[in-house]
Length: 621
Image 1: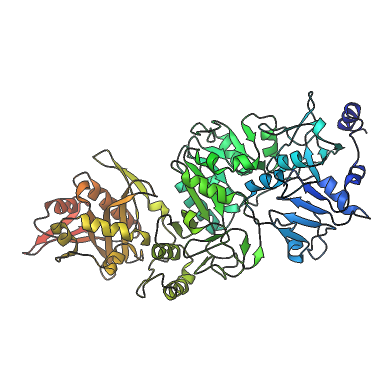
Image 2: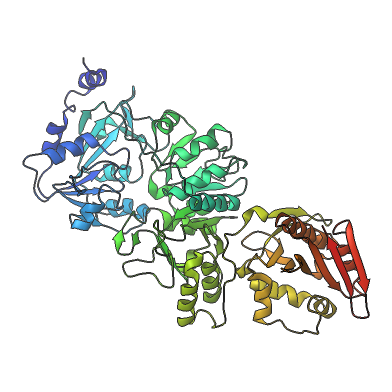
């Protein structure tokens, strides 16, 4: 049975149509051959090249991500007859890198097109996979534009697999047949990349934290890792999200189907899903086929820092292998082994940081998969390069919480990162940080539980302003200290029952570095996660013998009388009830009528007795 695509191509371009073996005769010894990216890798051509009994000598294959392009032997070694130069150490080339048969180039992928254009990386032959030509002779690069368009423009000879299964995509994806030297008809499924469903609770927890950072109207870049893709599952209640990403996967499809990916708040390419290549299933490819909603472009434009920075509320999510206590992040190596590549993470982190309302997020599980080693380290290990500079890192998310590093001191960074490390490694990290001079000798981390994001809530006060009431964390220390100094002297006495003009580091730590067992603390924050200020603090301290907790509050003078104290108390009561606490106790100065009134409103069963020093209040739930 004849292939209709073959017949059409032979009829229209008889001098160009050849089979794979005939096409490869153009390759000469010593040449550099570019191979198309990821699921658009021309696998028929690659297989034929590897099958040559007399391969041309000293040929170098150049590529970005390859997917199932090279076979492996029975013990897992990559089978290849050629040298390789790769910008990404994918699974099917990793063994060749370890054997020395492939060289990894650590470069931001957006810089590769310029490298090719100026001749620093000359391309002799480009082997790609495209759609069949339309009535005007234009083929589509389909699901991968990335660096492919640049390689084709610079190549001396272009060989293209023509596959009817390749979707025709919109954007800068077209190429005229006159610019292709050889057409190799194929009729095979386009390679699919399926993310394995996430079952690990740690990954799901990180994904929930990430989703909590993402606001309505954000524009998203989601990297290839399992964690970033899992985060999209938790955005079902968001509105008007957009996509401007180096890569897209199947994870966007549910958001698209439910009307969440409208792109209406994007400042550029409004309404469009912008990407440079796709890694997904046939369902994603079918959604992209002929769909003007999708717009694919060269990686040099998609990952341009200026283009990224111009987006409204840009969010980038990058998965990393490790981070040190100063904030240096490694994304392409782990303990001496090369994995993945720099890709476009550097540009997206930097561009996102410059976006109005932008949020660059780095995520990782706190330990290796076997739980034996911490991914948060005092210093990066030998063989782990600082891919992201510490000055560029903003959010770091593990299953134990969210660390915000931008603008923080080395001491603050170390303390914040140790607080989101796995508890079994925190003591060692504390000791190492102290030995390095990052932390003082008395420093501790008391809470061993994951950050309880479910206890966060937004509250609108009587002044029409909104605050976020959330559990206190170690990094709140500086803000709590500032709150203390905004209190008038009599309020400080009310809080500490002694005349205090300053607050010690130990006092500050007792207000935020809590164990959430016997000691619980909440803060009220006005403003964003990045730039918010603590305007209120409430805490309770449980007496195990009575199962009643002593409470205390601090409220910024500018925020008194608007219901902030009541909101903090309500939050604390709800939290205590869930834990089975019987009630609260408080000692209040007789002159502090507002606090007495607040205590009376706590619950129905409130008793008071007074002496010359204080009003003693018991509130039984």
